[in-house]
Image (cartoon, rainbow, N blue to C red; front, side):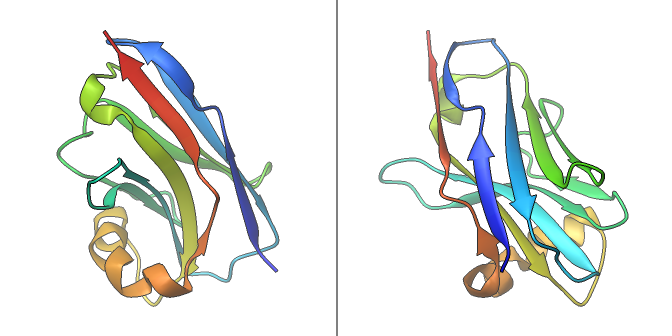
Length: 131
């Protein structure tokens, strides 16, 4: 059984940085997509970063240029480096992984809705950005 556990969340001031980690136990059959998504109270889920099994990444416009998704195969850990944080980034952050039938980071982002219910997901870590 695949389990995902996020860590690294916390409180940071506007303009600051955080790095989130997602430790993955178990293996996910290739090809796969791995994701970071977030949800703030009263707002819809926002999927914003994805990486496929070949290292191709995709980002939503809201985070492109500020956030970087990466995967360390040796450590079986997914990362999210977040820079230039602002109040709009305040949310619960989740990681997810799913075996899929395609590849490409941007393609992964485009199909998250369709695989969300079968994806393995973590319990989330809170990120709060204040001025």
